[in-house]
Length: 308
Image (cartoon, rainbow, N blue to C red; front, top):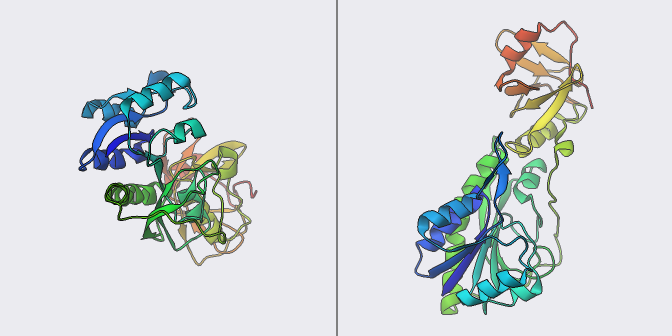
């Protein structure tokens, strides 16, 4: 089949590479426009755009996929199907209708569980044991289209969303190509999603990532791992924001938010057992081990983070 791939962030690159290496013909790539990045806020192409240029594939960067000029350019490429991974813009019906086999999305959950922008983060935050990836045909309703294939992946106790997403991106790339192969030879069929078990995974904002130390230790652990690397879990000490890396569970007890500074570790109380801090990043400073941060502040007995 003639394919036009749509995607934007780094997580979409493994799928782009897999499609490019497949037996199908990759005739174009659609991605979001160049965006400001870095301290200088210089306009920078997306990771997918950079990889497509390396592959020598034409790149389309519409401000919005409803743009008539973009849709005309897409029609000119005559795609049979458009595989999609984390493109980042809603597709109007006029664009969905262009390829005869539609737009086939690789979504990082086992649908209908965790429809939306942040399925991996929500799976970890909710302490799910298993997640996965699903290929489905895009329809106007959010992540509700009929599904082609699925893979599953166990969530490890120390997984961050970054760790888990990396594994799903690699495994999902193979699933996407297998789905495209099946569409091409007629061996796969799209099946409607179940009506039961639908859950949603909206984008997690910075304000959502603030830790409430009155919650149970396992809930704090899951929240911090879910928010690593983005948007980054955080708390406040003496009115200043402190970003938190993954924590580890302990059997010790401290009041919520109270810090226990030891020679080589720092514990903080939760609503149940204390957790051991990993790396922290104080406002305006570099990331460092929690023990180094605490020694620099010379914390007194009873010092602590804001509990909520």
